[in-house]
Image (cartoon, rainbow, N blue to C red; front, top):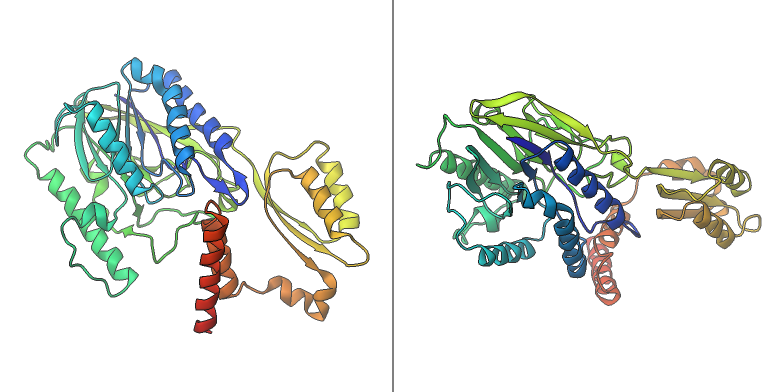
Length: 403
């Protein structure tokens, strides 16, 4: 059985003002081509299929596009196994699962063989068999998924909550491996959306915060499974053993991933376990991302024009400095729009306002207030203007009280 391991598609995502739909659909298209060229039997997507920024109509369109791309793969008997990640909307995914169950109510129960030629989405710890291989699918740990019926639980801190979630995740995995249907002598693959201790986060966290992230400190997975397909960290790499791997995201999603080379991983599992070493296949033509500084528009703009004779297709973060009376800001911004039509963020500063502390101001870190406001503006980018303004006003009030 040949398995293509991928993760972190984030369909429907945005970067600042830029809708990433076209970029992400192109990346999914490249994945579908590998399913054909590599004669893949199982496509395993280890979480974060959708972005939390995706609107309902965007989710619907993403599923329709997915259906069109992978219909030939499913019709020839290929199977898609997916699981939910921390960016997937829990309610939407549960609804999707209920709808799929209505369409095929005879699908096998816990630990039974499932039919090929279908898509499966695991929203809770799941154990299935497919072609003689056992698949354990472990979604991102949330209270709703792992604390079922334990409504009395209280946490003294985010760290305590994360510790309880880690314990619940481990307990769920142990329960699956100790169930009567689980055969420890048969080949087994784990798909999980989790942060494994020792994983390489890379240059950016992509909306991961230390308070919210759940880190699994275990070294047992390599011995328990023939292959471990991980999602959550966007840099492709192995953790502790060649067969315990993060596939990485399929597109560059923020500036922290600017230097990443995106790929998918292919692994073959036979009756005796892993066949050969896992290998990666590149995902070329991912969108370039960079930031540029315009320190003197009179000098820098002509140079940028010469360097980018045609409009630049990269995603660009612009930092602009200008002098009132010497430069007209609107003209500078208009010219930068023409050079970088896909700029996703920009800021500007008038040099006269900097005074003698120019260097200190350039190097100073953002204040807590600035950090909170920028985070909220990013998270609320898809919300109605009235709701966004109301939440931002409330945040300002709370920050004033805190100060």
